[in-house]
Length: 385
Image (cartoon, rainbow, N blue to C red; front, side):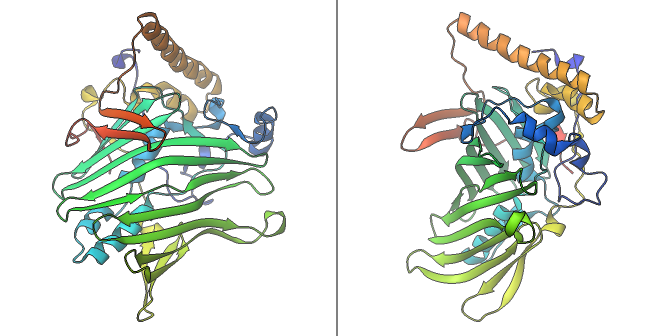
C-alpha cells in the first residue's frame, strides 16, 4: 500500500436528507444521462444475479467507502440520540428511544451512485464527542464489515457484523444486509438486538431509492420487542403512492400485548400511539436528526492509519469531486492493483489474512460473528461535527 504521506487525505460530507433544492448535496456526484447509463451498465447482467463482486465505473461512485456510510449511520446525527437512550427513566422509555435511534440509522440514499467496495483490512476510525467508532473490513469474499463503538462516559457499546448481498432483479437492485446489530446500555444491563432493512434501488418505471423489509428490535433482559416494516407502495407505472413508509408496534413478548403502534415516514416524521390511552407523540423527526451535517475534520493527520478509508481512497475521491473521470479511473485502478498485489503476496507465502481489530468466526447456523479484540475504542484523529 502506498505510503500515506504521498496522498492527500480527503474527507467528504456525510449523507443527509435527499432534497432536490440542496445544491450542496451529494446529488452533484451523480453520473450524466443516469438512467441511460444504468440500463447499459446492467444489460449483460441476469436478473437474480449477485452483484457483490460487480465493479462500478467511478462515475457511479460516491466519493466515500461503504465503511464510511456504515459509520455515518452511527455517528452522523445532529442530536445525541444514544445519550437519550441511556437516560430513559424506565425500561420502556429506554426501549422507545432505542427504536428512534434505530430508525435514524437508516437514512436517505442517493439513486444511481454507490460507495466504494471496501478493500480487505480497510478501516474507518472516527470520534464524535465521547463516542469513538471503529470499522474494519474483515472479509472480502464474501464482503463482511465489523463495527465497534464505545462511549465510556455514557457506558454504551455498539457491535455490528454485517454482510451486504446486492442482487439485480431486472428493473431494480436490492441490497440485503445480513447480520446482527447490538446496542448495549451497560449502566442498565440491557442489550438490544436488531437487524437492518433492505435497500431497494428502483431503475424502472420511476428511478428512486428506498428502505424495504422488516426490522425486529428486542431487549433480551426486559422482553420488550418492536416490529417495524419499511415499505414503499406505488400506483400504476410508479406514479403516486405512499413513499418511505414505516409502520410497526411495540409489544411485551411475555404476554404478546401490543403497547404502542408506530406510524409515519422514516425521512420525515414517525409517531407513536399509546394503545392504552390513545395519546400520540412524535418519536422521530428526520429534519431535526439528519440535517445540517458537516464533513468531519482531521484533528491529527499524522495519526491517521494507512488503512483508513479516507486515506485509501483519497485520490479517487478528489477526482470524483473534481469530476475528473479519467483521473478517477486511473486512481481506482491503482487501489485495485495494490489490493491484488497484496493477495498475490499472501498466496505466495501461504498466509491467511487475520483482522487486526476483531476476532471473526462463521458457522452455517449463526452466520458471521465479529467480536472486538479491545474492550473500548480509542479516540480517533478524525472528528465528526
